[in-house]
Length: 621
Ligand code: AMP
Image 1 (cartoon, rainbow, N blue to C red):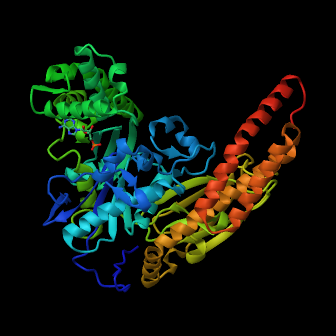
Image 2: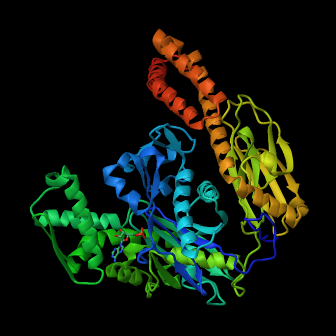
Image 3: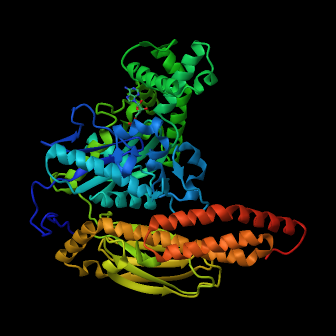
């Protein structure tokens, strides 16, 4: 399996260009950054003042559709919260149902439908997917490195948390594509951090690594094993709402306490809350290198010693160590089995945290690299390996093109992404879209475009004999198993009835290198228009599902609806039906939301009535 260099300016396939550059990107929840190999050393790209490599992962939508990303956008968090999007990484690849519990955390509008479709964020009258929003952050990083290097950059390695699932990884890939970046590989953040410390080629024997990552808002612990240059994630644990922000809050609470104030005293004064928060963060950072801190906000005395801070955070740190213990248990290891401990994330600068983690694992931690940058630096090293510049590092065989199946509306659903390590296996569950559907055609495709018609068909088969069930009920698991010789086995199984079918496809090598390169090139060229088509088709699919449910609802519950309610529901479904014919995905989403908002109280009423009837012993239809 081969890598094909394409000149994106001319579109031609060329001999490997020695100057070919692939960058490493850490796309973070709070901050993002980009790094590359400069004179043999991984280097993070800083802002024009040369001091800061971090770009806050914040997007602001200003007047006349002006989008800003980074520090400028972060300044709008307080003044214009409805138009300022943060923590979008928490939404990647998530459905509405997935984020139900954390919705209160966001200051902006997430459309609150109780469905399995992917979340969208509403800003004024436009709907954005987390992919589109992440793409804005990536575009900003792309611009930053392009102006630093004075050349175009089109290839990247992007990092994700080790626990990201297929959908979240695919969403990250799509975001890269939309930002004009060919994402050569998605790398786990803890793997990248270990690479930055050179932990990939140190020893002949297998090594176990614990990566302790405490950022501003999240905590992750990953246990990895490295053997013959291959990283394997043994276990992950953590807390998605635990981080440096909590420490700032402990300090604020302490200051209120020593000043004899309660939270309510200052809660209404937004600027004071903000000033205290900034002061608390300053104090926390200062105490990482000195023993005490003294200042004031208005008349509030803001002093604190390192010793007090350590008392304030002792329980918090213990919580992170409990997560470490659980991660070890899951990996069936003891703390003493760990050979290396790597520190990642700004909060690991706190000396107390370093020593507590060191004591827990019984060894000194790796903390020499900048903990904010270490993941991006590792990504840059991985990028350099892919570019073929580090000959001594083993590169695994990879699949040159993505493999997937056709789903509703002719969309390509990638199951094994390109550049996956071979052998690979991956699976996903699907369902039927028609009541009583007995057969399901599974068409297998190879390629990077969003519509299967632009990709290459490898084969198809029909899963027959699905027992009659209402649409959406069958659980059909499709598995792709790609062996080391590039032979693909596709299996489909309906889990309720155990009906099963499979095919073997040997045509991985059927494509010439030129053909493969052309397919990749086409996918990059069409990324933006493909994404637009995908978004439109997805909106249409969702709308069609809602139209079906609405029709069923009107038919089944006519008696509980007033004339007016019935008429309005019909009117709104008619409006949605017309919208689906059109090409405007934002309009479809808007009408869908309107219909949902109107019918959801009616649906609740119908449900209450059904339950009441059931309790009276009547039959539920
Ligand atoms: P990250 O999400 O990795 O960028 O981590 C940012 C978090 O690290 C924020 O909560 C910062 O306040 C915190 N942080 C940055 N520098 C320091 C420092 N010197 N001491 C303590 N915490 C820090």
